[in-house]
Length: 144
Image (cartoon, rainbow, N blue to C red; front, side, top):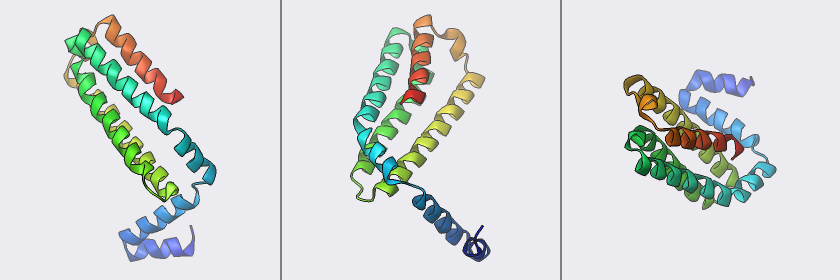
């Protein structure tokens, strides 16, 4: 920890946050910014295909609704964030904003799935098609 960061911790939480944000921006390299810009179309295809798979699974089996209720808002929010961050001139700030939104979306989805499986018997009522579709969506996420 630098002396400046320790002083920021003592002075106020806002200055500590500003110090940490400054640290994060220094670690965003131009290579990461270039990859972020280059993967815009892939991200759009990824989100749209997962929304289509969710809707298809719901149309086949109505017991898939808890998964649809969680997944579609997360993918739509990710799409909106990606489109909005594409227009930002500062690409390192855009990358950090999108990364944070992806993290929040992932935490929301995992928490919601946990709550759904604890309160609703969603895994018991799902058809094999729904389970395979959910498995394929989960498998595609790390590849993206």
